[in-house]
Image (tube, rainbow, N blue to C red; front, top):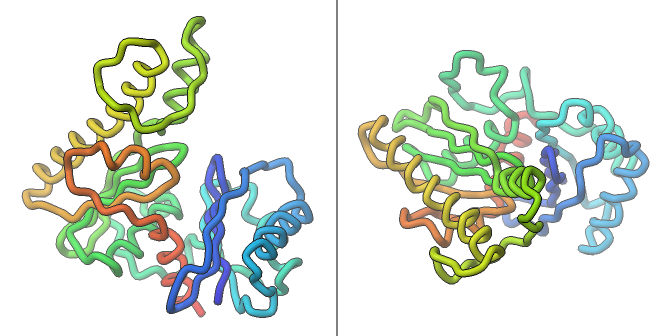
Length: 254
């Protein structure tokens, strides 16, 4: 069993996984001000909640889009588990052929998603990851990572809307019952949820037109469960895509 960790801008996703199953997945807040000890305590608490013994964890792997936290989190895991984590990045084997202008600039989370997506679903593939930003990445029929788009995430858009207007309140997102609404809160929720769903449908349609053939579409990330059910396009939800990708990369480098 290994500990797989994805350090995002808003949350850190962690879970334990082996060749048979994912044992759990949880989120803790990303906070650059925290020390390695504080992160070690946070991870220890999560492991204890799921009755995972430290001695059962034989390795760890980290993907991160917050470089200042790489060393801190790596040290925290080493202190807690006495294992040195693999950090996804240059020099770490992933088996992905990246046809980008500068492959080194591609986010580690996108690399991991693509590795898992190809392994689980084949190609061609369109992968939607809904976090602080919504990313949509394209794998062509030859399993090449050919590019994608970055869209403001749902909560980023919502925070911008409420912070820049004097009369719009902060709201929580759920599943709106209809598009045309008769009060402010429902109208905001409808706009955010159906607007993002329509954006995904439209971008996927344009991407397939540019590719010249249809692709399997996968969605992951914290907000995918809220948005994807409202899409017209068939999209497969995979909550564990990133953890499975981290396990594959760990195995390639261990």
